[in-house]
Image (cartoon, rainbow, N blue to C red; front, side, top):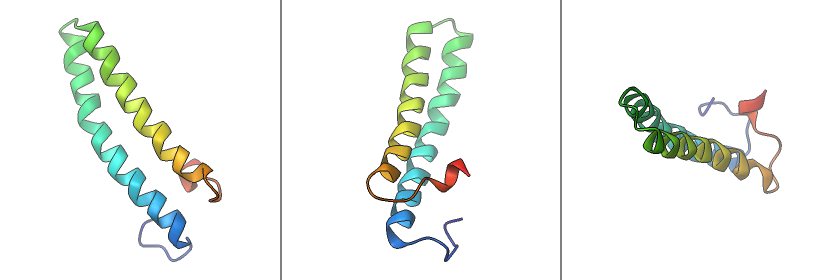
Length: 73
C-alpha cells in the first residue's frame, strides 16, 4: 500500500504514521497476553488501552482534511 501511487502525499504521511503506530502496538499486544496469563489484569488493561489508543491515533490522522482511511476499505 505504501508503494502505491494512488495516494496523495498527505495520505502517504498518514499511512507511514499508521505503520509506525501499529508496529509499536504489536509488542504491547504480546505483553497483553503475558500479563493476562500471569493474571496481572491491571497491567493487561494498560496494554490493551495503549494498543487501542495507537489505532485511534492512526485514524485521527485521516480526519484532518484527508479522505477516509484506506485501512477501512
